[in-house]
Amino acid sequence: MKLLPYLALTATLVAAVLIWNDRQPQGPAGDAEFADPFPETTLMLPFARERLTRDVIEGRRSLLATAALFGELNRLKGESADSGRIPGTDTPLRLPGRTPAERLCQHVERWVRAILRNDPGRKDIAIAHLEAEFQAAWLEHGEIRLPDPASLEPVERLLSRIRDSLTPLQRRNPCPR
Image 1 (cartoon, rainbow, N blue to C red):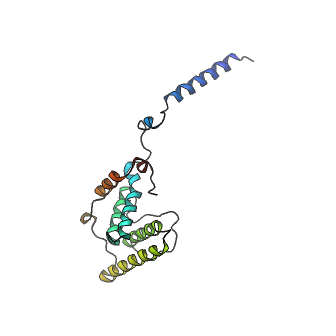
Image 2 (tube, rainbow, N blue to C red):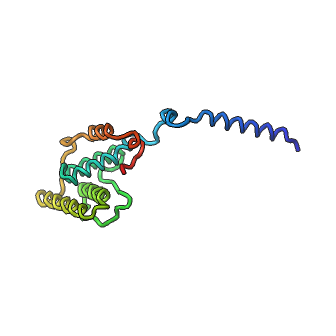
Image 3 (cartoon, rainbow, N blue to C red):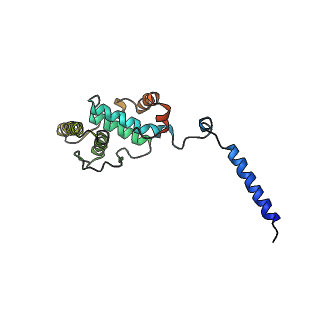
């Protein structure tokens, strides 16, 4: 058995590994050389939904306007307007989901439940407020009609405001919490 070919192959592989390792970025300075695995907009979506949900909880934004903006955020991600599940929020919902507009309202409800999961009293109050607003809108029109997204704050502006308010660590982490 001849060892020379095996030794030559081993030496070549070791040299290749050393050269490859030498080319890998070292620390934060090298991170800029590689593209993010997700587009920045995709990373901003959970932060946008959290901000919109907090606005609903605090009464600064209506359920229907928030649902319409959730639909626009879903479209940016290439999903249907009324898609959206949040892991760990399989609690029965109080808002019905018969139509796409109603499912967007449910999406907002899921986010309210997720954000207030550790504050049951406040969560119940917020959900009751959503339910009252939902029922009032349904009684007025016989269905849920979301406002035209063109009449609301453009999601691009919302995402820009959120992007400007995030720390560098938050920008790399797709989860708001």
